Image (tube, rainbow, N blue to C red; front, top):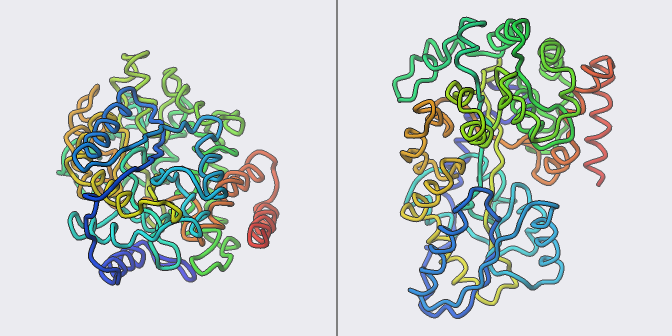
Length: 450
């Protein structure tokens, strides 16, 4: 899957391993016995009960170590968490420990304490991190944030087993079983070509595939990985624009065929639209974390019993899955940096991670690979085992849309919906592929100037 001017999956993983081994920071030393006070800002988890468990873990740790803790859960609704992070970085005061969604680390490296010592300790204890952890947290060779202990999630396929088998003749549970005994020859058949042919049949039967194509988060989280599977990236890791390529043209040609058998209003969908679509029983597949399935279990159990979470299709250049990962950092203006690091290290240990994964019902996907074998995913139902493949079990590469561009530019590509808008230029507005690519190049150049 190597392509000129692009970072391949193999190169990325190799680089991750080498840099992890080459971290030069001294060994991590626990120091919280002289801790004092600590203010902690966490994302307000949407799963009922999740905050209660993290609060108990943190408060118990504070009591044991003589640390007086002020704990705040900050909602992401109305961008409150993002505005809180920005305000604290500007004022140089606020929480000591802060949850940092997706690209926020890159925005505030001047205000964040290096975390190489903590990350090095975690890797030494538990092994490899997921690739997007390094992409988000390691800036110019320095870790400015650690894998977040809560809230990270990915975007697998969520498919109706019954509809795919009846109308497309594809047994998705056989291809992606709820155990490690996959048949590689079957997995190899799950490509975007196979997916397209299945979608045509399902559309004809009145049960199309649906995902947003517009300025929404979910739209980035499936279109960016789809383009990567064709070898199309807006920019390489060195900042060279690479979007004007045969690979991009192939991806856009594919999207012309796929959108023809999707609901015509997907360009106006928001992040909840695909959830409502699959819950309604009208859809055959979406890409989403288990939130849609969870609501379906509650509201439409007859539909929920057929939903299966599984791998994305493979393109000519590999198989990619979108992610929205959360990191955690320490402000460099904190008066208690060592204690803040101790707490983060504690939250990332297996005993605590096991509790946090369980209370979230499997919604959270840890950025530490060793923790992605928790029984919560195997035991989820209905149907039994539906979440087994939610943690990556095969050859999918977990990525944020915009990878491998320098993270600051990738953040703008994501925020401005570069890839979904390029698709819409061709598939909704009827522009030529060359004109759509020219528009995208102008946009990318603007991101670079900005």
